[in-house]
Figure 1 (cartoon, one colour):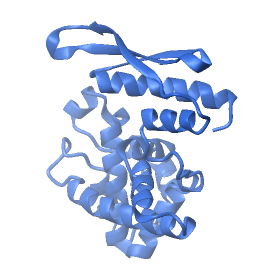
Figure 2 (cartoon, helix red, strand yellow):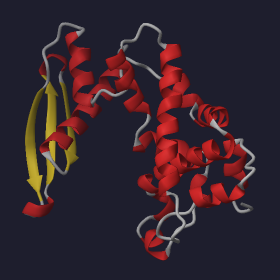
Figure 3 (cartoon, helix red, strand yellow):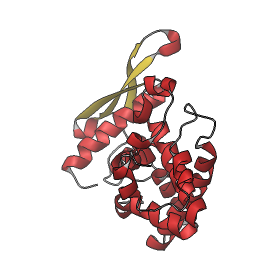
Figure 4 (tube, one colour):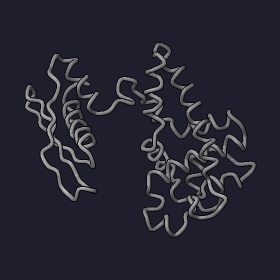
Length: 227
């Protein structure tokens, strides 16, 4: 494809069958020959490659922790972040409806397209080529992978951090509920009395709001104290 030089350069794979790349970068809103089947293949290959990297990098990590860390790496948020760094959004072909609803900035579209691209590389040149492309794309993510935190939700991280220092767990409470019954926004507070810390977070449910408040508290604590 001639319109995506930055993306092709960052991918680092020359396609023998360029039609596979074109399909991988075609959203279902654009045409019948879209990228969902390639996404299915790419998801499997990506999980396999990341599993192997983690297996080799953390030889003493048990199976359950390996699964947790992999889930912390292979998810929509991380995939979208990697896709943005590769400038994949500029290369995705979208229909008018998808463009009006956020288009190439939507995390789901970016993540799905990236998985489809990995599937296209696998079908074009096999596992080894896909492994090289994935490890190249995820280089920084895999290099910085920390099994102590990956795959853990903010409340768990905060509780473990506090308990590791002999401190009591936080208190959570909902301080505000706004909006109509079918579209409410909750605001929750996370309070750690022993440290004089109180943070707030919002979300579409109590659980999401508490997780957001916990994330803010964890970030504040670990910014000034060792994790």
